Image 1: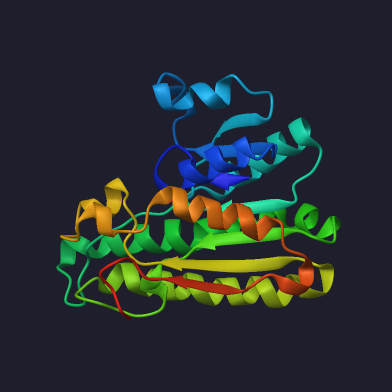
Image 2: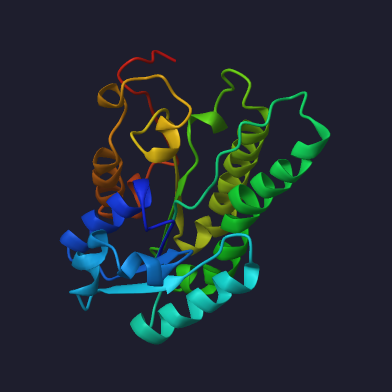
Length: 232
């Protein structure tokens, strides 16, 4: 299961895993709109892909997606969290920006929490379940004035540690992937870094695919990725 699969990193991971021969269940806000796009052609032509509606802010949405995936594939052994939002909410936010903080918490933190909870029994059942979370380097350090976004990503990093601790004895392995600037629409909207110097979504997708091939004894918990112009 891959959330946020209609664009950016989630889309790149979905393409990579489909090419690798995995069965993939793709969660996105508007699968009908996605189906009408050229980008969806590879998925619609494959019997290895399921497109399903998913709204990270709605816990029942995640439960419905998990149930549909089980009906289709009979199992869930991997969950890749890519859905998330960016808000430029500063520390000294204006009163009218309070809703931005609520959105960041509900989507960036509670969204993965609810979805993981819904899929947890199946993830643990196989003995080699995998969870990958696109946390971002904003969950490792704060640069500039993105207080609200960074706070949500630090919280997400703590959630990843809790997932690891809770699932370890069941063979569930968690990896927090923390890239800096990745060449996506979201990053380009706020960064002056040349997109060529950013990490590319396809590079993150290759990493995600390689992680799935590792045995339980060798799965890294945390991966930090700097782009071409960053040193820290």
